[in-house]
Length: 490
Image 1 (tube, one colour):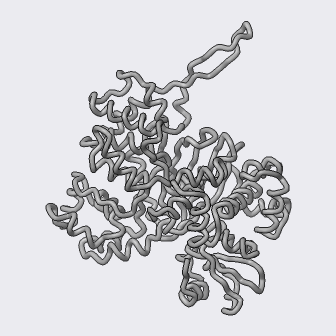
Image 2: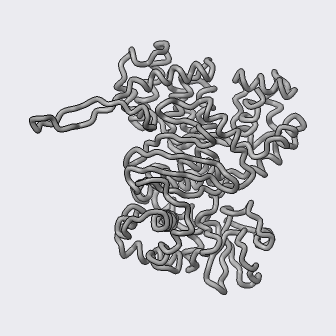
Image 3: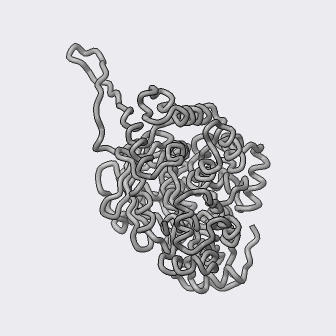
């Protein structure tokens, strides 16, 4: 990635936190790398290098600054929204694909050879997929060291390292400290809220309109899956190695996250999915500047800066929600989905009096769990759906397409190809495909111009109803954010 030295240096000199995550500042005289907003004395020009990723800085032999914690900066907005191969790769790496499937698995998901993928990532990020995954493992290890009482060997394997020696060497190289020395900083970290819970701070670029986010999620919250209460959003998660739960509380400068995980190897993907859900890697100033240039939206932007696009932790969940929500109100869709979820029961293996294992059904209504999987949906009888036959068969057709890999709703999916395959399924039209592009796939430039609520919001703001699509051209490339604002106006 080509970066303008003068522009980057001015950002560092002004300690502009808007650029945190966009690039990293390497200081050759001290051997450390920082985020642009680091409060330390601005280094001399001749001692500065700029890097597009923490992995690139580490590859140059620099260690992370222990004052500004560059590994805890928000992610770069471009990797969150870009639809090209590098953007997709970065989202999959954040979701832990390299740790689970290796570089061959990542390359296969993207449809490229390992060599070509390595070449593209080196050109854009200054580091290959292994180095990028290694940087993420180091961050995960630091979080576990400082916020849990686990032994170092447990942390090493939970963070994705192949051996304790590799773990020790990487932590020393990245943080210039032994793992045991990092643990002495635990007293400065937020206290854990219970056994098996990890607490951490999810950084974002201000402003963040937290009230709008929680409002949107609260109206659509499904009992048993999620809830919004006292300024905190809680939900169940389906993660690669087991279920989990998260509580997210937006506050000034960060979102407090409390995670309960079945398997600590799921920490990195859980964090990545929570960040995507709340759109924490967005650049709100760039978005608002574009939308505020339209006189019709300018007052709303001035009144409510930092509106985000609520996304998804599970693409299949969002797809089922979209299908159920076709041509019905949010309240009606929520009722139907609640009935669908009621068909799920747990089977727990227990010991009987004679020592023979048996099954016992039990109710977990007080526990929050992830949404139904595609396999579970295919096992629900007709009577469990509580919806028209065509809609029921559309959901089943989608579930079969997800199970056999025809449709990829993961963060690293190809947006155009996924949309094409969705439209090929009976019962899925442009509104549903575009809604999924907006919320499941993270496309920042989607306008649901046929949506009734969108048209009501446009009318409330004095926008043209019949030519809304043409008027919205001035909102590119942030029409998804305009869509959320129109929903709020309605």
